[in-house]
Image (cartoon, rainbow, N blue to C red):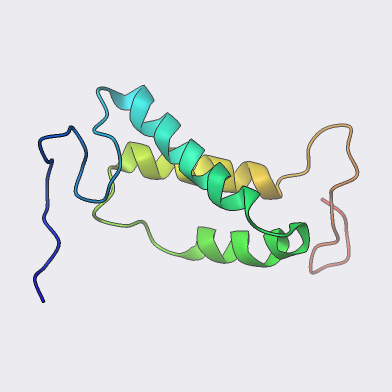
Length: 97
């Protein structure tokens, strides 16, 4: 079995299939979009379980830090209480965030 290729191919894609970004904003936006696409596939109750576990995992060394920052921003947003909503849940101490 051969290892997957690294770097960019001729179609302007990275070996992982992500579009080759042109600047930092594109990288951050791609990471954010990738996370929201994954989060959209999860049932609501699983968000409270899976997202904190994903945030606890270390960053992938193969991803650009700007891509990872966008991905993590979407994860944080998914579990953060939004102003004016009732999506806050009790913490370990029993207090609501």
